[in-house]
Length: 379
Image 1 (tube, rainbow, N blue to C red):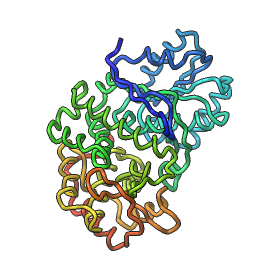
Image 2: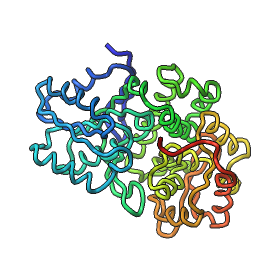
Image 3: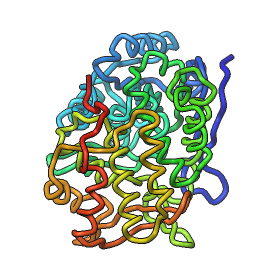
Image 4: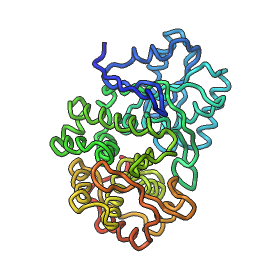
């Protein structure tokens, strides 16, 4: 049996679930239980994981299933309408029905695409996520958000479609490039700022262990970040609620993402998502500071924690004007009103509506005033 912990999504009063997120090692037998009663299964995977995905497909076939592997491009290239249509074609030609199952095996882009394939085929079939990156484990695989990109921006087309289960096998992180682990940690740090400051304490106390596969610290960070996301989506599955006290609900999970998505688009999605989120968090920390909502020390702590693990905190690419134009079509924008998730203190996210362009420009100076010392393009 594997050494695993089960984090439950759903429960009394929850808008989400129920399903389990299992974190541990050697989790294949958990997948066997999730495919019980299924006749056909499709494993959607990126090109770089073709060999491992074939092993997974063969395992499922050995259980008596009609198992298919659907190979998609690596990274953000997978999140394209043409790739989505290709997946539909495979499901159609294979005779997939509503009682069949999609399994995603890959990083965040594969999870986003595969979840949308499942959400849209026959108006919804079951999906199980097997995330292979730190980023996907703590972000894309949990919460039911799915989507693809368009020429106008990231994740502008999609649906909410919760998985039947999520298997976060920590063994898969052993062969993940260090740069991908570091990038994924940005989403973990985000959870520390918006909800669980213990995450920040762990990273500051043991920065190297925090990006070391197999360490106790990394496992704790994964479990804590997943729990933050479960807690948020359980109260606001479809990003439509605002809790008492001004908490922005699920929008809190977009902390740092408005600028991040604009930078990703400007860089033609060659920048790692977590690296862009790191820049976005420095930006919104300064925006909150300039708006007299966040104290100096907490704003500066963003930069120090992120730099401690090698994440970028400065950017020398696209102009403020170009990035602002993209931010104006962010999902959180309402009409012409720009909206940003900011902090009023650790674990206290709120929505800042309508900051002026001069304030936005000044906040952007926090990430553009000097070129980053860290590489953030794909190897």
